[in-house]
Length: 116
Length: 113
Image (cartoon, rainbow over all chains, first blue to last red; front, side, top):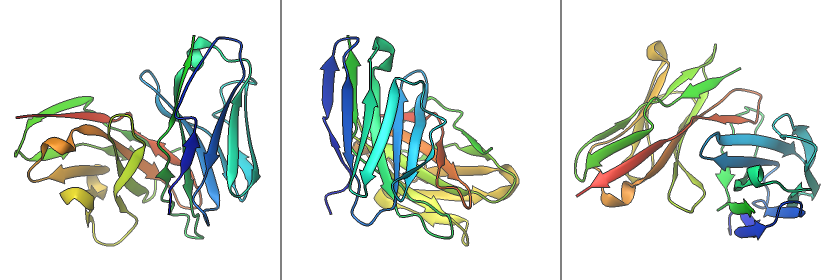
């Protein structure tokens, strides 16, 4: 099991550019989460999917952010246009959600984004 | 909505000393509780979890945590820390029927020789 795979690990871009972060969840997992980590705000849940369907996107900061999950093995988080305040580490996590609702998240190594 | 508080931002302990990291939650019913650890430049790794049953749970790397309903707490402990335990530790809470986890702000642990 390769775990949750995120790419790129590091991204440096200029303000106004489009950024796409990618995530491959663990095979067999049916829920996928995007978190953002900053010094000021800690870990924030941006959006999560269950069976490829977005369930809660209330944490997406603004319309510049969008996320998709076209199939069970791939998700993207896109920022367009990017701004310096988007600089953060973005984590993807996946889980197998049981009927009991007890959910254990497995995290990827993160994508560190720097917007100049 | 559920919430979790980690009152200590930064803790420093000597190698070999005991450790306790505090976590308090707010939720009307019994939550699911987790501790995760994050080493520099890495993702979060699950240390242990509490779903039900025995209130003292054992995790990886010699860590344990105790759920105390009366105090709404889930403190993490280790009897003797090692230099490799230096990391950031996050407490998280989940609730039945909801896939989301809510994380605390984290406690950074520094180990001194």
